[in-house]
Length: 176
Image 1 (cartoon, helix red, strand yellow):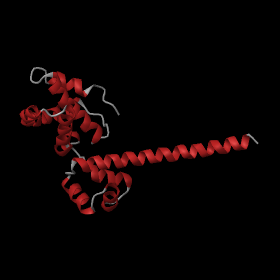
Image 2 (tube, rainbow, N blue to C red; image 1 turned 135 degrees about the vertical axis):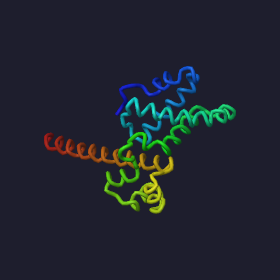
Image 3 (tube, one colour; image 1 turned 180 degrees about the vertical axis):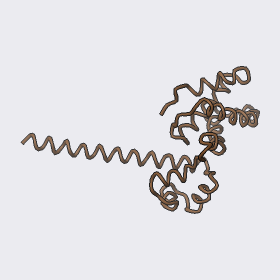
Image 4 (cartoon, rainbow, N blue to C red; image 1 turned 90 degrees about the vertical axis):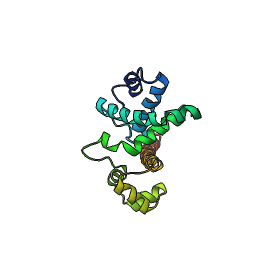
């Protein structure tokens, strides 16, 4: 689901005067990447984007000189912001009920930690620890999201295959 406003442009306006357009764009794109990779494109309110931007701004201020001196590529800068938000922003997004991608995924897919770990290449202990601390690593979050996307695509393929079989039977029956 897409936002009703453009996060990147909103953040650029938010930090006009503090950062150059390209620097503010890095923060906005980092938030968009976090939204797509971790939140599965969940719609964010202005308040949530403001809170995420404030977090990302503090982090960006800390690493800004290093990024400039090392001339890090823009994609790397965006990913650093997204990774930082992945590790530190769950309560901003869902303050009443903590967003826990591992528990939510296991519940949604009716899996236990062992099955999820096996499916994404992590041990049951690593999954259990990350779930209990609500602190999965960025690669673990990415693996979970890719696994869920893979399952969705497999379901679509199965549905299309069923439709193809039905159409084949229909054509065969009506061409005789």
